[in-house]
Image 1 (tube, rainbow, N blue to C red):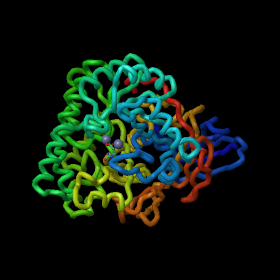
Image 2: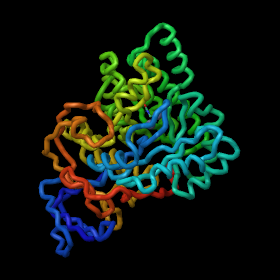
Image 3: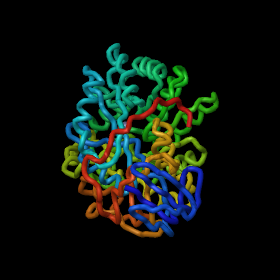
Image 4: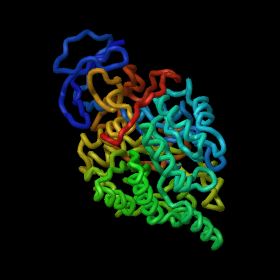
Length: 459
Ligand code: URP
Ligand code: ZN
Ligand code: ZN
């Protein structure tokens, strides 16, 4: 199959120009002005933006968590992602404590293989680091799983202690990988949860009040210190607040580089949503939404180069699942749906409102994740030889987010009624039109596992 995209405004992390793109098979074969090449299909992209397919490096599909499973699986989740302009995702495999990484990988492959519409890769969450796990790090990296997720919270299920963290960092550094972290102080949070419950404070607001800013700032600083000590490339996921960002800022004083991901929700919505009684359960996630001053700090951090990635932490639960915590906030499954709308929200609220440039938008939605996680230049750029993962985007199209029309397998939206300007019109994945004007054009199973390269913490 060959496709010629004519006259689009091509936007990458570094460039912005009008030209044609010729796609042969799965890759971009030529880029130029007025290309005179015959193609089986010609798409007129005049007046449209053409940018690299989004990469969301933080999603949870079909994940067992808090007594239930996240409600989007590889099929519904990657298809919803494509509708919104995200062509690749990185999901989290969770090691079961007492079992091997291999065991967890096989379980996740059972969920992903043959089911995805979009391309995907895995981070390996190490929840039990011991001599056996240590031997598996090299194997995982050889198989293209080059990032290792850790949790400093969720004690008894996912959390590792600082001794395990340092040992893991040393091994990952040796083998050429990256350590990523959910950086919040699990012991402090557990204590606050118990205190609030003993006082009969059980509404979603107390989820927020059990995870104050200091719990994230402290853990982020501690993680940065351990990463500095071991020298491992380090990445903090879903950062929400000024205190945590300042911990990273402080680490730059000693010339350390710690990479930071925030998520679209932490830039756009705040903790006042927890005041609406149980309705607030829609936004019960960890870490919780914060204050407007934290949003300001994150937007500034993006433009200061301290925050490299905007992801989603997409971890949807249907309303009936959220009701598991009706009488106890600590039983509300943590997570919220966003995989479909990250790119359009960031464009509408970030680019259109003058908070970030178009080039920065591309960095945040695809290029930096690709570079950090060993996928560049296959993914995250528009260049000859790169995968033809492209979004043809109408910057003027207005649309309204609603659970009635979204494609995620969840019966509410955290952004119901938001009016956005800018919509993904045609989305290509490896040279195939995946979505065209709201219609899916590919089959389940088209999505492939992305074998990632070693990473060195340089982007
Ligand atoms: O609330 C969240 N974030 N749920 C998913 C698990 C995690 O901590 O990322
Ligand atoms: Zn987390
Ligand atoms: Zn997560």
